[in-house]
Image: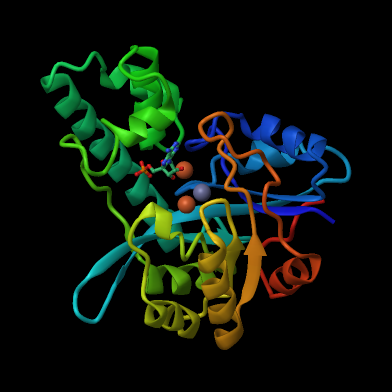
Length: 284
Ligand code: AMP
Ligand code: FE
Ligand code: FE
Ligand code: ZN
């Protein structure tokens, strides 16, 4: 059994349509794939409709969250929610709020770039997002098309970086509240790339303990952004807190170099996760 529990489609900042995503998953030899676009469930129906025989599809979303430490320090993080009721009103409103903030913030970043003389406009970025969740990868691709940078990677190292003068943060949800919200909507939760030190600041161990106390189900352990020491720490935390551990590629199509199925989840961990009572069942 090959199980990849974290992938993105063109419903957010991946480059494959949801239908292509599930075909690519099957062609790569996966038995289970989760579609987890940023702050949206928009790709779910298309992915299910296009599901090749033999492939199980898990419906999920990657939520943009923050953890605020007792001293006031805040860290941004990503929370994966699976198999929740997409019509649950508070959760639906939370996703809509995140997406609308992403659009406003995307426009602000693009306006700053335009004011500085970069050949980019909102229309081009919006067209690349195609009605899906807007993210910096769309701005990065617009800059590649305009010839400002040679690659998406180069854009993230330069003008699209959070350290660039154009940067604007986006809205996020309190992670402890969001865990409760997803549980309330019948879903299960996994803390995405929890110890990805190469991405930037990570939460302290106490934060993961607080999340576990709030009902967190799992930690993503095998992830392309986790080095060996990160994995050791995630494994130790999961053991201490009784959390399921998952593995996934965080596939983004051609926006990132990582192929689908690069990291995978052990079958018994997957079974433990989906054995919990949930609003939806894995389709397959
Ligand atoms: P945003 O959510 O709009 O702040 O943009 C962050 C997203 O950009 C993350 O979800 C990643 O998927 C993506 N990302 C971050 N770094 C890179 C990179 N070097 N190349 C491609 N995508 C990236
Ligand atoms: Fe992304
Ligand atoms: Fe993420
Ligand atoms: Zn992701």
